[in-house]
Image 1 (cartoon, rainbow, N blue to C red):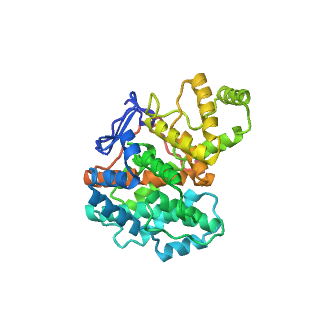
Image 2: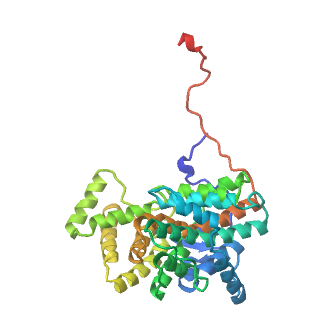
Length: 373
């Protein structure tokens, strides 16, 4: 029995949701190149594409955008829970808990059909920014800033977070980030979502499974580790940064924000995120990009590995004033679309996901009664 540790190279299923060519640095959603979507689309349009399988007409997009905005409000019971939770250190723990509560309030939680799946999908995607922003309001002891139905998905989140409407540059930067994070084939969290769905568990359970999986520092948790690293390096000169990198490599430690399991060349999302980070740095008079570029050059020269999507997303979040410990939730705000698209796909073509293991322990051991041990 051959073993592919971490399921490396194992093809587990078929899907038409997204495609990666790791050797060429290509990412497509439903056949559309990520650069075209990043430069010409909106998050709402990408959500429609991933859930429906095709790009919407103007009227379809308008109707869908309105529907998404209408679903942002949270049930009073959820707000009560958020307001009365004990102090919790990690906002992602709050988010995954609220997904469970939303499922508990859904009378059709166990109903699986295309219509119900679509309703739940839009509900979860629309309510995720509200949960994140409300909890941030609460922990900062501010009044809740309620959703604004007249703003787009990204702009509305920044409005709820800060209490003021964002400018177009901020809105576009977050919208772009959400597009680029929306889907990425069978990454660990998406696979976790599909495993849950393959048991015919409810959509909320699949999203909770995925959220818990993304929380790890080798997945979505990397973005928070990147900003912690950049803050540590912020006041160091080039020689000090070089020494810091060398010490990390000599100690066999990971430098967060570098390398990817699939891409053998530059992650195509990096270019788009870097451009957005550059624009934000100029407007905000920050130097996150210059520091990031310097670090990226040193790491590539010493290790020949490229930066990944977490690396420059960090600069965008920092420039937008998003708290460090909410970075993982920013990832979730985008990636929940891909999770749900895969959950719906799994429901439509379901086979229980149940791989084998190779047993390496002892066999045929003789049981001894406890009095004789």
